[in-house]
Length: 126
Image 1 (cartoon, rainbow, N blue to C red):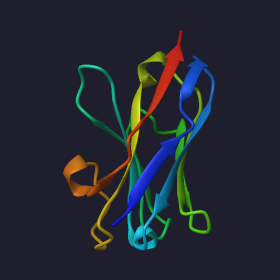
Image 2 (cartoon, one colour; image 1 turned 180 degrees about the vertical axis):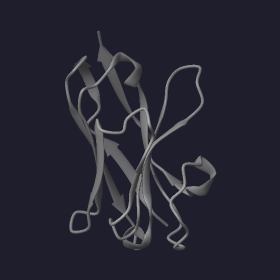
Image 3 (spheres, helix red, strand yellow; image 1 turned 30 degrees about the horizontal axis):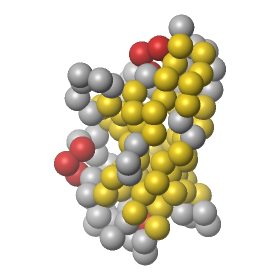
Image 4 (cartoon, helix red, strand yellow; image 1 turned 60 degrees about the vertical axis):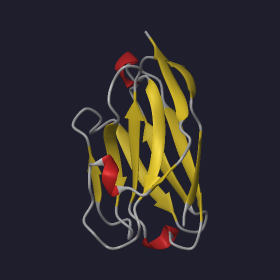
């Protein structure tokens, strides 16, 4: 079992930066691939970024590639999403997710992730 708590969201102007954090508890964190998704009003949940259990593999959606960076700190049981050059279309609720730690390849599909945080709002003003 993994419990996830996101933080770091807020209001920022276009072109600005934010760093989201996802604090995890539970003994499977070290074995779990982690990801970030987002959901804007009236839209489906969208994959943003994922990082393997080892931290050695990362994958990004085309819409954020080159602007966002996912990383993880095993000592702090935390996953981060550094977001730079933010755009108004990045406005959404951002969710952290963890898989079951079964060693499967990284996925962009929400159903592959068993544990979810409550979400943190990111609003980018133009």
